[in-house]
Image (cartoon, rainbow over all chains, first blue to last red):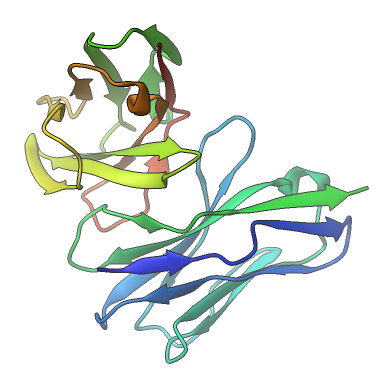
Length: 115
Length: 112
């Protein structure tokens, strides 16, 4: 079974600074997808960024980028120029290419942004 | 386009009762999946429906069931509620599975 581990329960960053959230996963599959989701107090899960395992190039979405290390099974999220609106729970998630919309989530990292 | 809509937002039930939660996916989306979120167990996959057929099922007891209608709207039902069923239930939809997943704001279920 696949597992996703987020070892940082809480993180804090100064506004305008950069922060990196860690995620490791375990799988025996070669074809899969990795995601970072943000859950603000409104509770709605918002997709931040997505990475296909077959792509070597790291995904980037504006201020958000990932460091995908397939051999190490590591998938970290870097948030640049942090903003107050980035404060939320961040979840790393794994999806097998053969399992439809079944996501396996990590336990989450609560990010605080200091003004 | 309207997002994923879940109703109701909040629900209070007592042990032994049953409950039905509703989810309307984004227009054009045919895949709907359900997740349970609790402080202790985190986010766990319940099941996924695609074109009215259950495609995937998580590791939950048979008290948890779901269905999908021809318009892609989905319902999940929990029978004989237990205290441990108190959770945020999230619904998500995608165009055809294997695509980006969009979540609703959830239904917060409290079992007393």
